[in-house]
Image 1 (cartoon, rainbow, N blue to C red):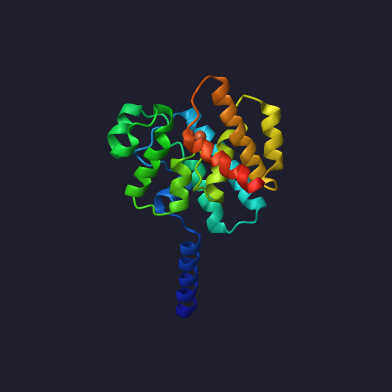
Image 2: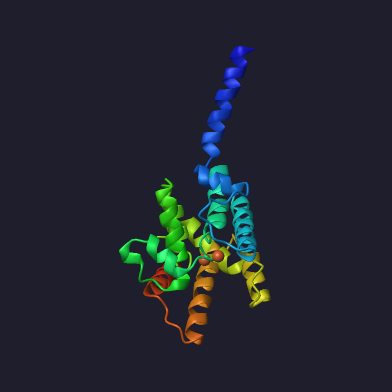
Length: 211
Ligand SMILES: [Fe+2]
Ligand SMILES: [Fe+2]
């Protein structure tokens, strides 16, 4: 009996190790936000919807349990500082990042915070840091988060078009991410805003891949 229990405990510990992400992210997956989070009710609902979408895609893509949990966690963590004052975020960021415009500071600020808390998942950190602009370094997770943030069903604009893009995911993954990027660039140019060179680089890379 004792030997069986030891074996079962060992298997359980190994399973938890295989499936677990960083404890801070695991806590998020059961609804526990870190103390440093600054998110209102609406923002939290948005993160839940982004996370649910990423979870759906991960399941449809038959990703491993660990990978699915990373995708869920990315959705739950990406906007944790979105409702902070930009001036407060700037105080926490390294000097090379403080000049970023206010609305896109929160991604790098969350990634910086996660890094300090011991999260060393490079792909997830880039996905979170750059989810507002896109990034040529994105892996599959970064691309998925970038698309899910735009396509989640709670956003009010162009609901039918966005529903159609959601419908095409994840089978038409890269084409949908490219369309999302194009739409985000178009939104910026039509409103007279500047497009970050980083977003254009991301767009150009996807266009090259599709050629
Ligand atoms: Fe965001
Ligand atoms: Fe978001």
